[in-house]
Image 1 (cartoon, rainbow, N blue to C red):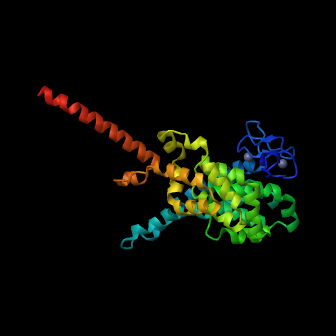
Image 2 (cartoon, rainbow, N blue to C red):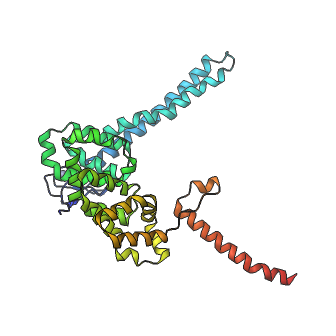
Image 3 (tube, rainbow, N blue to C red):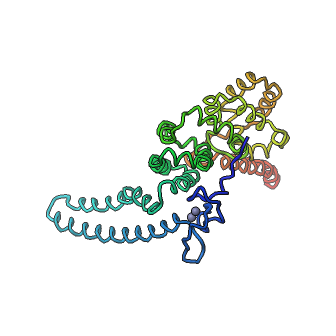
Length: 339
Ligand SMILES: [Zn+2]
Ligand SMILES: [Zn+2]
């Protein structure tokens, strides 16, 4: 199994070894990247463009404000005599609010101005990995589409090392038909792509599925191992879940650190049991059952405020409430004594 170290190579020039990272965004860059920030630090071209674009966008906003004020005045003058004419002045104001939404994609394109598509694919993937934004994913596909088959072939290793973690960690945020356009642009079959994930990215995906909480990542593992027909992927996953490191934790720690994992076990209990049976993982099956027995589902929200809280926050709140209750019942008899 080869695990690929993606930070060894420049994110913009994938054939060059990197000799440092961008002081602003942290992407690995090489000697070809010579942009310098105002504070004299070496930054990538993307960050340089973003700084410039932000300046342009500020001018735009000021211009927009002037136009809106002008329009409000104009509309007010024109509709002065009309009944309910006052309402028309809201039209330019609405314009002011929806305008930024329309220019966002154009600003995004300005970020990548002067950067070739093959230099843009890795940085946009890093953005997508961090944001999970469908706009970033769309833009990535747009860049990818412009690459020739040979270019894709040349950069395959670096491309996959950025792409695969980005889609695994953002599986829940991908569009429903994410594979279709992607595989077409990559010029690869889904089976081959899934095998690549199951073989070369198994450890990194399993590690993060177990130890950090990424929504729906177990679903991603089930899906990919099915397409790749990889039983080993599932087997290693189950073994990692039931490692002694996790089993030996106290209830409190288990709940705090691995709450998300327990939730997945709870949600997909049937699937996990089925896999254990199929692969003859008897011991692991029992361990999963023992983990499930220790799982405390998140409390049910009682108010609208609580419904927007994260499960951990809600759990913490209930814990405090319980403590308060204990204190209250404890002080009650003393009050009674005094009266
Ligand atoms: Zn940067
Ligand atoms: Zn470079």
